[in-house]
Image (cartoon, rainbow, N blue to C red; front, side):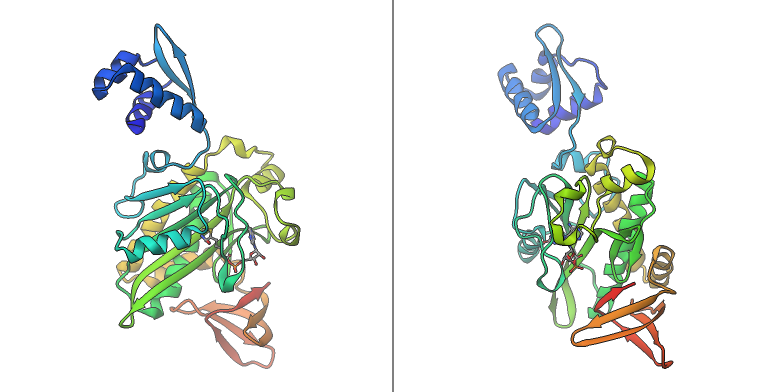
Length: 328
Ligand code: BT5
């Protein structure tokens, strides 16, 4: 019922809607409408009430709920099912549980806060309450293990392109899939998967995007390496992040993600690679590769059709790097 009321208030574009219209439209009492309005107010929506004229929506907060995400979402598959929480341990964990129960391809899980947000290799991911986009998407592509890296690269392309479309922000991709702004990490992607008979059973794409944190809100040990869209927009363009909505960026990411996912389904991996190269801040640079116990320096020359980074070492040998850490 809350979503129908919200829809009507939004459709009335700042005009009052009478309590009578809302209650008769929904077939409920005016008290029930009033209760719903109070719940919406508690969530942060500013709704003016007048005993004569009814209710008027005057402010939509920057909150993550299924109505804000689904409203105007132009996708066919990704985001048809959306689960939102005020707190979870990790959206990737929750998404995995849903995937194991057989949820649809494209199911999305979002939380305002994660208590145990994860990075790769057991590292932790700082997920401050309401300050970022902490989101996981379940995908069920009909592919084998060798294609998983491309899907992860494609996700970083989708995020970089969504940042441009939704906020006019020019982000770079550091191999394999860190999204950076002026060399600082604004978003990380964690892909986890379940395999069955050498085929992917499901993938969980975890996307962590720093949105409105101030520098002091990051843990000390990552302050010099992490940034948020808020910090970047203020420093670079003098813009205030309060003029943007996380839900709008989420929708744009989901829409871009569907586009790259469709491209992969059509077998056009080359298109993804070319797009990735456009955003790359790694190619052509001298890089330090850390892979397990090994460390080596070389020049990042290219990425191949499987998403491996091609690195030429100073002695002329060429290495294909599938995973590891890259410092530019
Ligand atoms: C990543 O790992 O970059 C993947 C992060 C994925 C987070 C999302 S949030 C939604 C979903 N649910 C989860 O539980 N996870 C996913 P990695 O490349 O290993 O980077 C981790 C490192 O980044 C840490 O060791 C820190 O140094 C740094 N870091 C931690 N929190 C950060 C933050 N909020 N912003 C920037 N850097 C951060």
